[in-house]
Image (cartoon, rainbow, N blue to C red; front, side, top):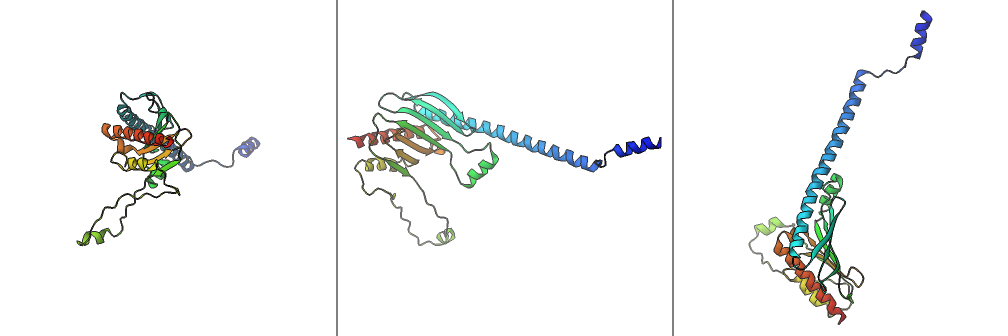
Length: 240
């Protein structure tokens, strides 16, 4: 009997987990499960918010294109990019598409990085023209705002404020005749919201990006479409 007890004792495991270790493991598993659940809840809630926001923006574009174009199809690229193909009548645009880029809200880390970089939600229109333009043109709009010395400005009553005209910085050594009409279009009331414009002989011939907030109303969206048409006309003049 004594030998059998010794055999059982030797075969028993040397390390037996105590009750506190079991509790810690269960707490860790429960914490990880709760964190995963919160991340999943964050993703699905904000992905749904992005979808509603993107569909609303697309409806504004569709309303602006009423009687001029129709949406052929729309698809989501991830949880923050909505792309739709448009069909315009002849002599307007060909192979037109709209890409709505939203903030990556469903992904917390990417969303925080985008907020830190001060990224914007944008709408990009791309299309081909009847004839490819004979110029390479890329326009980027920048606004410089200084907050330094605000107290000094507020405490002084002798300041004279002068509103300067827009300044154009170009990398081209020659100022072609077809460029001024396009630049003037961008400087108008309807065109000043454009963040970036590109004209290129290769497809897509025309690409324009605007802040999503600039299309908050139907009139603003219609104005955006009108500016695109003016840019297309100016680009076609480069062939003459």
